[in-house]
Image (cartoon, rainbow, N blue to C red; front, side, top):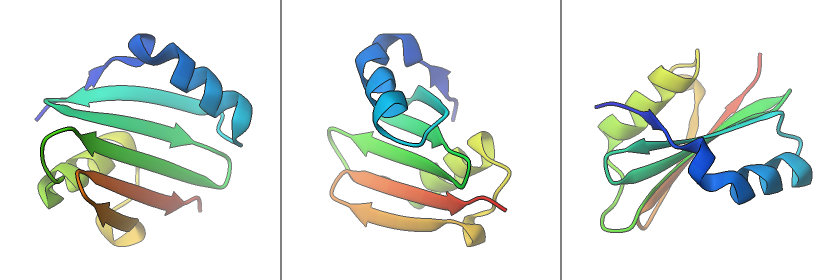
Length: 92
């Protein structure tokens, strides 16, 4: 698995997140056919994984956490939905 930075392709999303939330960093990645949005704020980090075609697998969630944060899966709160996974990690 490999993350490719595609932030420049999502400039409106990035601007919206930076101006409308407490985020101080927003990056967008491609993980195959999955879009990964990483948001970092002073008190937390968020990772959103979204696929158009299938549910997100646990190994993809673990990979994103490992590559984008210093946290472990045990430190993260993961919410699964249809074709989506949201990961929240509190700072500290």
